[in-house]
Image (cartoon, rainbow, N blue to C red):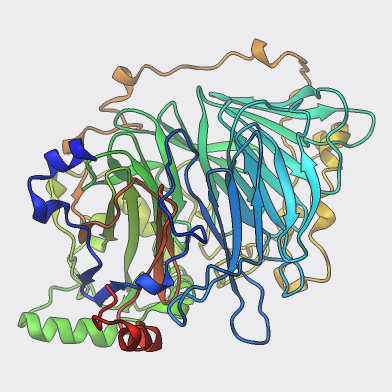
Length: 596
């Protein structure tokens, strides 16, 4: 911290902020809503894995159904999360676990199966295992990769497959990902694999076995650790970021590469999707946030605000705004503009339906401002707005003007901007392989999204014909993808498991697989990695130091923002107007009358 303080340029620069303001109003830190280990002692994080946070809503009758899980060192905690409503009670964790010989690294709840009586929580570990636990029942039901026969390296990311009650995906620092089914065993011997599909810098293998066993699939991606992956809002696509500096976006069901992007330098550490699946943001060791267009498969902007590695990026679904407008210049005073902006802005729980409306062929144009955030090892929180002058640089400004400072925007390449318009207005196919943007309104309906309602729902026609080639790969054909239970018809998410162009080659030795290595010097200045002057450079709306230690968590909830640092403190920032009862209660009880 001393080095960081020296670079900061004085006390003012290094003062930790307890509130910050945006055009929506002031966000305030609720110190009484801080979650941590019960003793509230800062954790000595040297050599420990990042603190992570997972949320689930169990929909209990009390209206207090939010639950929080977080790991600190060898410990894992599960609490009722009271958010902005009540102060945190750290003396009563619902479940607490301390592990020996290994540390939890990541975790994920299954939102489909969660009830007030039971939740399914996956926990990944530094030694490579994955545990399935129920912290409400205080049960440990299964341990996967127990003997480390599948992979001996650290688990970097674990996620339930969207729409499934039993499939989950696990990434490791070895550079491999594995698809598991909770109903299947991992076997007593190391798995043998058969090549299913191979492409540039990736290969996917099925598990050769007389009886179905885990892992169902093994993905070998890029060169170096897989740091994080994220499913698109409709669950059809998978964005993966690696230590080799590449973002790779796959069609998850077809096991095909959709597009790639290269960091400016160093590894990419984090990735997220916009609520409508049109854009992906990645961050990493180049201290930048990079915005990538799914439809055009190209970088459309970079954001510079962090002074060190970016550890988490996330879109704020509740502040992403849509306004009906006409493509014309606005004339009038700033006061008039602000008034119109406030009147026209819709936020919070209707954001996703409005994005759906934007994707439909409505005669009235809708302009969109995407809000996303990032946190980094520099202990700073940055908030960014992605506005239409970045998304559509050659259109006249509409009434929703940008609030983002843009440098070198005039140098943005013209290629692809018209394609973006075509995708928005006509829901045509993207420029790369004719793949539809996740979340677009399509001529044939999409399966229901985890987070987005669609203007059309389920591509039954395209899914009804299974490719005959798939019949030959019985192991993959029996991936038990029917576990998406009928008792959740409203959440049913059928997938296309037609495996076209399946390779008949087989190999038990994955080290024979040749990986295509890309020379970083040869990618700079290409569409994979444009030069800094060739794309718009965003400046953050907000860039505040909010912690003593590096930040590892950023989650946007409806009434607050949640952040966490490596010392093990999980902080709640009330959104404007959401401070409410907790603030007044704690101010009354506080000797100084202040909370932050």
